Length: 192
Image (cartoon, rainbow, N blue to C red; front, side, top):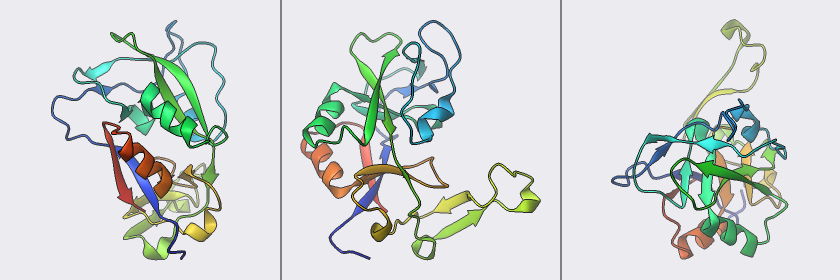
């Protein structure tokens, strides 16, 4: 393991008092259904119209939060941090409307999936097995506790989802530090 590269799970701080909680991005502004899982495929998403989110629990808006299905929602401050870091090739910011708010928000779509989970260093990993009767998930992770990545397998990526466990978003220490310096509200980091 390289001691010069650190990676972190990026999640939202659910303990911020009075914070908002948002819906899954499963409809657009015209009420048409969209597939919320497409934001976990590591590919550019093309939509006919902006996704529409609504409040599951009204409250204080955040710079960074996770919607239903752990899809990141960010504001212009977060977009600015990523632009300053030159990460346009690694992320897609999808304009999104949050019901009751006029300011622009964006779904953050990580454009890379990397096979990098270090099973031996994780607290626990469980795989989908034939007896689970889920052939679509066979060999993928069913659960990962205490996720750790192998930096040698990450290459030059700064933001990505780990193969087989795309419910989490991983960022480099460079992104973590830039978000902290910018005072981004809602983002939490756990070393992976």
